[in-house]
Structures are given as C-alpha cells and as structure tokens.
Image (cartoon, helix red, strand yellow):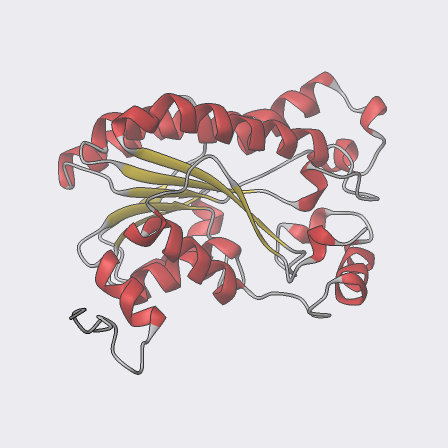
Amino acid sequence: MTAEYVDPLPIVWDPEAAIGEMLKGKKGLVVGIANDQSIAYGCAHKLRAFGAELAVTWLNEKAEQHVRPHAEALGATIMGPMDVMKPGELENLFERIAREWGRLDFLIHAIAFAPREDLHGRVVDCSWEGFAQAMHVSCWSFIRMCKLAEPLMTDGGVAITMSYYGADKVVNRYNLMGPVKAALEASVRYVAAELGPQGIRVFAVSPGPLKTRASSGISHFDELVQMAQERAPAQRLVDIAEVGRVVAFLVGGASSGMTGDTIYVDGGLHNMA
C-alpha cells in the first residue's frame, strides 16, 4: 500500500511570513536611500520587516537630514556617510561592518549617477570625464563592494544591484546610462561566476520606471512612465514595495538555486516588442 502524501505546507500559506523566517538574523548593507520614495528604501523597508538587521549610508552631510530619520526608523544599527567617489570611504565602511558585526549576509547597491550634460546628450557626444564618473559610481562601486564583502560573507551571501531595461534595449532619452547599466549587468554575471564557489550569489534587479529622485534627472522621464503604463501587460507601474519583496526573496534561502541573473520587476514590460 502506498503511503499517503502529507502536504508540509499549511492550507493557508503566507509567502511574506515564509520569507521573514528566512531573513531573521541576517545582516545587510543598503546603499542608495535618498528618501522614502527611493528603490533602496523600498528594499530596506521590506528586508527590515522580514527580520533583517541593516546598515544604512547617506551620501554627505546635506543628504543626512533626509536619510537619517529613515535609517533610525528602520532600526539601522550601523549608519553614516559614504561617498564612493571619495578614496577610502567605502573601505572604512566595510572595516566598520567587520568590527561591529564581524560578518555580512547581503548588500544592496542602489546608486547611479551621470553628469547632467552627459546624461542629456547623445552617447557619442559624452565626455570622457562624464563617462568615467558614471561608470565609477554606477558600476565599479558595485564590483568594489563585492570585493570588500567577500571576506565578510564567510557563510555565503547575496549581492544585489539595480539596473534598468535600457541596459538591454535602446530606450529613448536613457542615453549614457544605457551602456553603463549594460556594463553593470555584465559585471553581475562575471562576479557571480567568480564568487559562486564561496557561496556568494549575485543579481541585478531591473524595475520598471519609478518616479524617484534619481529618475528625475532623466530627460522627459514622464514619457518613459507613460510608455511603461501603456505597453506593460499589467498596464501600470510597479512600486518600491514590489521591488523590495523580490529583493527579500533573493536574499532569502528560497532563491538558493539562482545567481548571475537580471531579475525584471516591471509588470512584464521587458517582454513587449
């Protein structure tokens, strides 16, 4: 007689509660919160709600007044300024994490920048200085964070950065950030391959257009928003909480069989011709 199969899941299953169980006790760094509309804030809010302990940074003294209250509300146990363009600040941050936590389970990289004149012009017209700065802040800083996180992720870990559909397809007015984000997505694949033997998984998350402070720098951004709403199968924009839930899933153990991928959270927009 065949033994009766017993479903190990309860009849009513709460996926958010399941994620929360996986994140209790996890310690992670979130870089890129500008205000409570930031993608980074949506990620931090969900990660904290699911039980993770956070380290939060802000760019400079001017940004502190906008970010510190949110960091405190999130119960961040490590917080402070960190500008990736200033030599030593990134290294000092990871030294502090090593000193106070002794380990790191995940990092969320949600920063990008290009000088306005280079971002608003044609790619072929961009300056070397603008291109180099965009690559430094938006791409190289993620590679460097992964390098610094590697010795702290002794039991494995997860590193996540933020990309956009314009990395894969030409998006009108996305301009210089297209090649920069393409380099970022390629870096994710290579870093995933290099750090995989240490149990470190690496992802790019690609949200649809979101009305954030960072996106306001893109010329005619409202046109991108309108296009997304009209063309996406969901016919709406995603929100930062939806992005945060996907990030929490990737950080949690349920995604253990995944790495090196770009994960779209855009209501299906990237599938449309």
